Image (tube, rainbow, N blue to C red; front, side):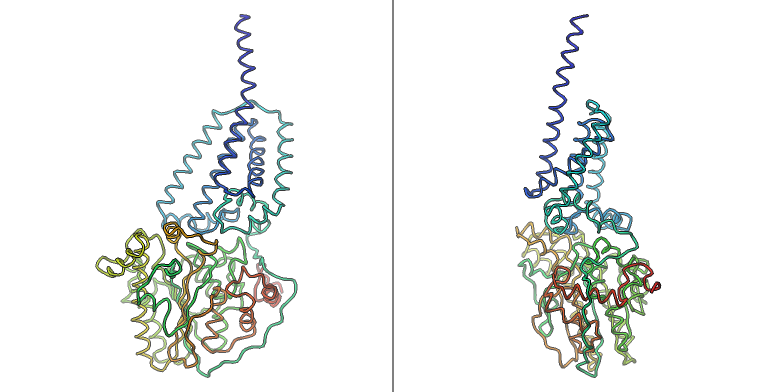
Length: 574
């Protein structure tokens, strides 16, 4: 009995020596995992502080060091993995403010558009739940006294709070487009007050305390007001950005020889087209509203009182939206009505011979744009009133691993794209783009012949790059600057406008595109648009990214004049 007792005591002593070594080994493995995912020595101390803080929280709940550290490391890897998935599909890393998006239609959207990716996420989530359950049930270590647990938590909280206030953590919140620090960026967002705004409130991040005096209204350059047609081309970018060649028909669409064209900088990548729509129509960057950017169509309805359609309506224009989405999509009908678009036609309301159900099998631009121009020409046939038409396409949205252009059509273009870059996804993208370009060439000729004297200004632009361009970047082994994935194209064409000057245009931010369209149309600018036009020289091709103090003061003017309601029901309260 004595020998057995001694053996048990010896085993217990070995176990006591072993427990700390196991804890240290687990901690080293967790830190190694952080090093691999973060790839940033500069931000590694903050990431480790975040890891230990999470471990301290779990220690309070679980009572032993082994499970606390192991689960903290697993959680860090899971956060980094989800952030990498989001980054690959939006060019932005995961932050706390993204979590509510799961309840705003994002998850169903990804399931429909990227089923393989979502299946991988689901499988990874199942593995994480299974592994976490196994750790909780079978990996318990020696219990730690409650007082000691609380002391460790307090120390970890102090260290994490100090690390969150450091310059390194602050820079993480500003570098959402860099492909590193996935875990650290999410943890840094925990300490960012803008991520915890009340749901009903809007907050402008780039606003000054003093107003900017408004400019005088700019008079019209011509007595004739042209129809203004703006077409948002879903997920269209210029392949030449990546050094890929294009054929003459595509080139004349992206860079019309008798038009103005250039690079367009947008706020989004991979999806969220309504943020580009918002910026074009309000002249503001969706990024200025931080975590509310995704919700602007819902939260912003009735709260923006200066817009492109309102300005045109004040000059006698009739305003129309024709969308390739159904009326129930997001809050489109309510938002567009609130910013001054009087007639709103959705894809399920276009008259025969257009067939919405047949259209939605491919979202073909050949079908949709033909119906759009038909509707416009019917409206202006016997009506000299100038029109503003905003058309939203959906043809080139990803994924590009399914063939939407029927076999036998545009095969030469598909072969050309494949020869340029041996990638089936890019070949499909380019073939769809070729269909769009060919369709527009026909429709433009129809407008010109049907209305030989009526002036038209037509603006084309891409709302964002598709996820496909990440793959193109990898294949071409390009080194991006973090902003390269936020560049698309714009092209402005004119029919029967004598004062229009074609040529290569300046790089533009999408927040300025509406203002530039008014300038090229030669119509009057109200004080708001005249002042915004004066910011072009200050901001260059950027808007949100610009450090212009005049821009910030302009935002203050808009808020003080009641043209932006940051608080719900603010207009009624005044």
